[in-house]
Image (cartoon, rainbow, N blue to C red):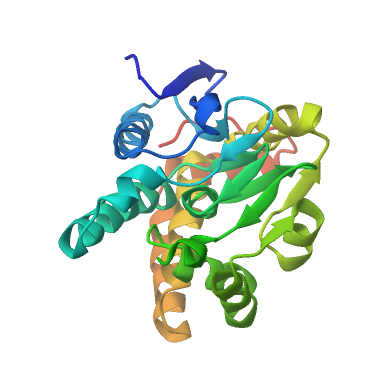
Length: 260
């Protein structure tokens, strides 16, 4: 399948999705959001894809925000639809059931920061910059920024960034807990691949259940979240992969998982 605004590669079970609008700093148009939703629907259903790297084309930007021209023409009803459209895409990434790494290779602002936060792990190049500058335009984050940022860095820090529109560099984003690692630009994709290769060597169903337990559980009270964890633990105990993984441990050999 060909995309107008994305590049798609698949190697050794890892899909690399690249937002490919470098002349516009990979800004998100409505069409690009639609293509992102479509490509992640595709990888969700593709058994050959075990994990995803999401990045931006060029050396300056991951995604530098939304298309301001499109926002300028919105009215109240159109604005709500615009936000819900973007949230559908970011929610699909978060609940993909397969690990997604944001390889942030430059500016991740506005919708770009929200896109990165929807991914399960964020690795940043040393030149990366993060921010939610929407208040500078008289609007607010609409693709989940007010919610995911607070969950990642805490309410006080999230409010500071959303209310001021200030950017933070990669080391500060790491200190805040917004990114997991910071790498030299040349190492960003190789390190992302290395991480995913490690993850996809594990039991596929166990990985999916970890993602589900963490993503859903953080939105619940502790009691409900623990019951969810116990339920998922029971489901995974009924799989062939659990028997293989535990048997391999007892026999001191590498496990051969089949996703069953």
